[in-house]
Length: 505
Image 1 (cartoon, helix red, strand yellow):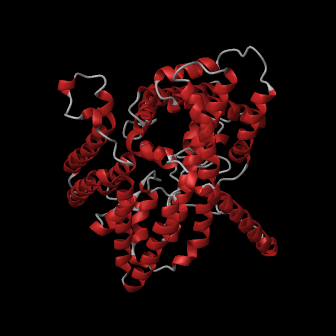
Image 2 (cartoon, helix red, strand yellow):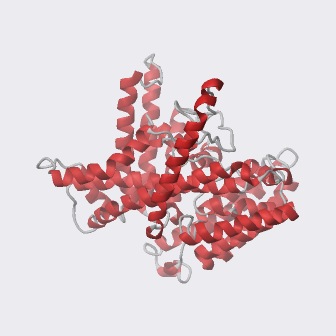
Image 3 (cartoon, rainbow, N blue to C red):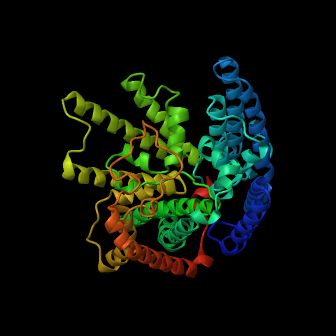
């Protein structure tokens, strides 16, 4: 049962919301019991065989957080570091066992592997609930939060809107929202905004992403057997980059909207990433919570940019390689992450060279920004080949087609269908505001100082009071009609929806 399924939208979600409201009126803490029980049921409906893994992970991390909470970093720094290292190692080993043992079984002798290694099935969303709990352990160890009750902890980790594919919410930002004071807030306060998020996210997923998948799947499947044509390869790769964005950002919008029904604000995860001028800016705008996780818990502990220029380049390569293998155990994911790391290093070196020559790290006006956007989009699109291809051979066939000179110009039968499929998604990602900006949503976390908000970043909108009052009604009506139209379109394709891509990670 996925967020875009008929059963979830018209049975599970309404019943959970009804139970939450009714129980909250009787006992505030009882509302958390409803959310936790609903989240466990939601996960069981996704992958009941993996439920013991999820529950075992909860017990492991909550138990270790008790010891971490008793040993502050100031009074017992060495003990805290040791406890934190052991607890995080347990999480990494769990993730590695399920995620990488099946791949290793193809490379290593059978006697060196555990029984049935080849038949291991990756527990649903293991990467997301594991990273959520690692961030929790680190915050407890750093003294940013104290150990919550087991009920609050389970609600935080299992909260079903974010369980499948994030966003990766920090405990220090989400746990205060589970306090009795916050739960007493009227549930209707965020309902309209939440419904708008849900409808827009649903439209992104079932109308845009799933229809792009109809184009992408056969093209990449053909690369398993032969080299596609130049135009077909570029069409499929560009369509995949758009499919992935609308699939994942659609899920994030739906998760934010559903969370608002329960009075909980989740962090933002996308900020117009395909308008980025540099590869570094792309990673500040794409999957923001994952980027923040690796920045805070990997890049900075490795030394960040504090240990010299070449050490910074090495740190960037390490982090992006880890980002790649986090997404999957195949060699294509490792290559994808390493190439992004290489591009980050090239950008860093270019900025350093310009500064050394007396320039700045600015992009050189509107022409420079336009060139930077085109180059960044081109680079990201090419690298998506490794992310999507079934294996390295298929990826190389796609790239061979994309970088071979076409023997002829595209025919009308090739150009017009491709333009019809891509034009609307490209207009949306290049020229329209994000859902969060359009609906005036700022999330629940303040951007960290080192994560620079680029031009066009989401911010509270400041308008003239008189003009706002004059046109507020018309704007609300227009927005309502538009969202209603998107909802009708999305409802027409609900039964044809496919699984969220990031649920596999």
